[in-house]
Amino acid sequence: MPSILHWGARQKAQAPVQNDMCEQCGQKPKFIEPGGSRHAYCSRSCAKKAQGPNPSACALRGCRATGKPAFSNFCSEEHGRQAVRLGQVEGCDSCHDQPRATGDLCIGCDRKFPGPRVRELPVSGKDFKNVRMQFLSEWDCPSGGRPKVEKVYQVIVPRDIRARHDAYRASQHASEEIRTFHSSQCICDLGTKAVALCSFKSCGICCIVKSSFHELAFGETFNSGRFGEGIYSYRNPSLADVHATSATTTPYRVTIACDAAVESEFEVPDEESLWVPSADAIIPVYIIMYTV
Image (cartoon, rainbow, N blue to C red):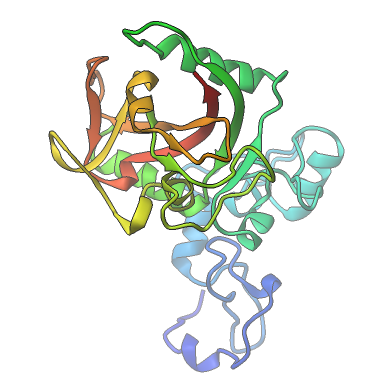
């Protein structure tokens, strides 16, 4: 690929359309040679990333071309569409055309709808039953009694948040993830009306989910506890329940099921909190609404 040192001088004043964006990063326009030939990527670095360290075949059965991360490991958008039409993979819930890449959306639709999304799990579904079973099996309250799980929302975090979490795991050699629970005050009507996160700065649940722990209630960026500043959560959800406060308009108590990155063979006592130093070390996975 020719030099791109003078790339900025060739950019047009108006914003490029979606099809002109790099097929790897999606942030910069595709590189155009002086003769007008358009490349699929904005730079050599993105071209290398698209190929990956160990190129593999296109995910469409029977195709031997190289699969590309920019096309969800298919060799092209067309082969992604074919795989959806043939029922080889699930299609995007938004465009119903391209294969899913992040949660229930394809790469293109995921870029159109930035930020975390939540969707309610059907009570009769396997995912709901698995979350409920884990929540109840970990619940250990000295006063006895068991909660009733009423609703579960899956949290679909943006690709950049997931990438930061994976980078943290790699840099800290945090090779394992454990399920923990974090509760805070929920002052909105989450779970009683539309499936949507509120914008109240005092709603700890929605602030955490929307920012993936980078912002807590009232703009705070950390908890304070026995290990100092950081994020605290619990293996035992009944301990997290102590911090759960709900608005008077909702019948539910609310907790967030999280995936926390820890070093291999790390042990967390059941009656103590788990501390992580950075929001990148923990991500929200489910919002659980329950009654006690």
